[in-house]
Length: 417
View 1 (cartoon, helix red, strand yellow):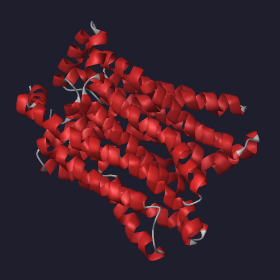
View 2: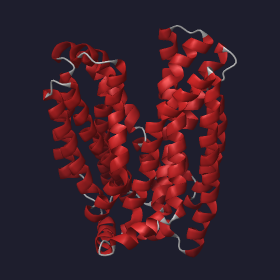
View 3: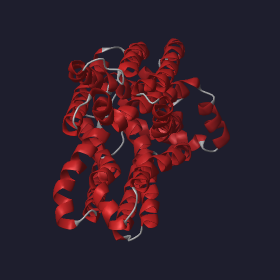
View 4: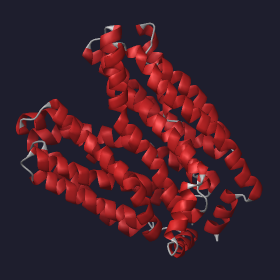
């Protein structure tokens, strides 16, 4: 496969995932309108956001089994159909209960898409070249959020909050057609899919192999801790800046958004770094980044002065967004075999989804108990230390794989054939 063709299909895949992220965050941009129209509390409105994460967590493991059987490309098309149905139903509903149900439906599509995209990108590029496209893909949530929040400024005043649901529904149809016509996995990946199909004759053995393989679980612990640390920042940082450092709301929001900008820089920069470092050293790089991110995350709610916040936000964004590209780039090699990658991705995404659900519960509870934002260093620190330990354990696991059988090299040769 030519480099141009691989990048073209990767870009289509990335843009497709952005539609799912836009669907997730359309509630954030229209929450006040939904509250007024349906007469619900802010707590109930918040559940409209949480529903996606809960559904994504539930579907992660069974969804990986489905992907192992039919392949990631078909899973993306199914996910697009699910998000279309969920958004159409949400746009037509007149009750909170039904709207909440449609958000669970959307969450299934969101969870499936998060699992299916990395294996597609992995199939399009040899191991030493996939770092950059994987780094760009990890920005899909940021891109989707920026897109829908800006689009809703026009759509909502003219078409109401339901107009954003219709927008995502239309885009899901458009990208279903574009993705179906343009994204074709290379012959090597078809061979891997065939191996997965044959392995499905022994489903218990296949699932057991992955569940007993430590590599995916080490990465799942990392994604769980990342979701806790980054989720607490996304949910609470503007409030922390106002409450502890005395910033006004506008300034707090503006300063917090600096990290979102540097996250884009961090994701792309990490992608370039991954293409320059041999794959067998990626696990060492992963450990190093986790050590730095642990230190940064522990102090994020303990800033001693206002003047340090902006430089910290710039550093935080770059370091924070360095973790997902490295983590997901390690996923194919952490799986027991190429055919086991779908289930391995399910395990890894389960960690992320679970962390996303527990963030508000754990972190909010610590602030309530201790009456101090600085107390967030306790749950965040514990989770990040566990992730750092898991990253350290991953190094000998990856070393053994390369010493016994250079998985990445074999995969690359298969794809090139």
